[in-house]
Length: 109
Image (cartoon, rainbow, N blue to C red):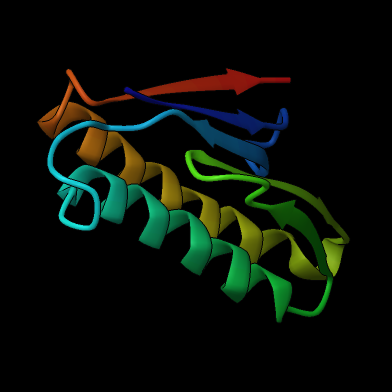
């Protein structure tokens, strides 16, 4: 199972997201759950990395692990909020459709 933890600050802005584990919903290279989670997280990382007012650190140290941590200024807040909403909605949809393969936890700090 892929376990995902997203952390939002008290304004509902995404501050970090970590995914670990394997969905085991198909053979390696054909696992739709793994592909969906990977595309959502990697795209969010790439989009946020190129946005003024947002600093992102992240990585995928090994298969089955991906993380990102985010700092932002007032200039990047609205964009980050929208991007975080998009990411979480997508991850929530995957977790809802494939509950045996993906779990999403959202923490507010």
